Amino acid sequence: MLYRNWLLSVLVLLGVTFNPGRVKAQAVIPYSPDVDSEVLAPYGSQLLQDAVQLIRFQEYDLALSRAKLAARLVPNQYETWFILGTLHLQQGHSQAGVDAFVKARELAPDEAEVLFALGNSYFQLGDYESAVTTLQDGLALDSGNTQVFFDLGNSYLQLQQFPDAIASYQKSFELDEEFWPAKNNIGLAEYEAGNKDRAIALWRDTLAIDESQAEPTLAIAVALYNQGQQGEAIRMVTQALRLDGKYGNLDYLIMNLWGENLMADTKVFFENPTVKRIVEDNLVPLEE
Image 1 (cartoon, helix red, strand yellow):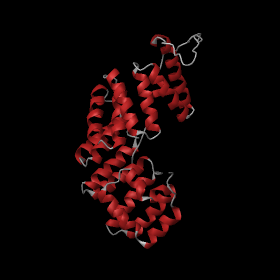
Image 2 (cartoon, one colour; image 1 turned 45 degrees about the vertical axis):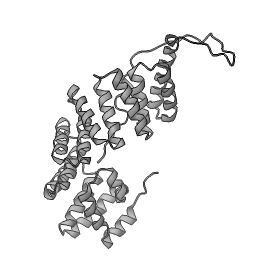
Image 3 (cartoon, one colour; image 1 turned 135 degrees about the vertical axis):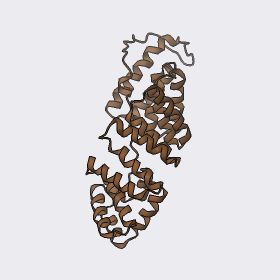
Image 4 (cartoon, one colour; image 1 turned 90 degrees about the vertical axis):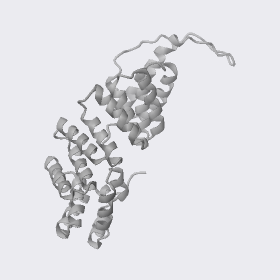
């Protein structure tokens, strides 16, 4: 499970309002007046507020264009770069997101939210070592964030540092015992570490929290098939794919951090003729 909270707390970071006056200067091409940055700053702040409003309406393209312009007009406010980075990540621009968050960190090195966002963007870029370091720096400032411990666990999982991943997921779950993705991903780490019975138990615990989740249901099916329990495995894969047909896509499982061992067993499972028909009947294509 790869759980993402893209916009973080972006909508509550801007508490100031501006009422910029009307523009009175006129420019005659090719002359460009040298306008003082203090004059332009209120307009940049207004653009930033416009971007926040557009985010609320999920108009991300329009929000991004305003945030880019705001970054030129008010480059010394960390909120500007924080919002710009968040929007870049929302649009899948991982490197641009990292670059924006790095600037936000330079302006506000003690803002935990900036470090959390930067760590998440490093993860999206595949730089898991930097993700771990940055998220740890943020947690040193704010250790009560369920999502960030989960992100840290995901980073350790990708580095195949399974004990550290399990410890991070456990802290995430301790902060919120209804946060089933943390329990689910402890199962992913245990499976990769070779503790398959422990993984099955954890996925059953996950379903005890929310029985409607396809991922732990499918994971249990794969593990049971690997143990020779074909009938129960087929029943559970049918249930899982009826809950969410996207889990019939191997690429989708990899996106959700299924590791090498679990993926190898899944491929064998999906080659079973009965399972293959179930997958084909329930498959939901991934959006491009």
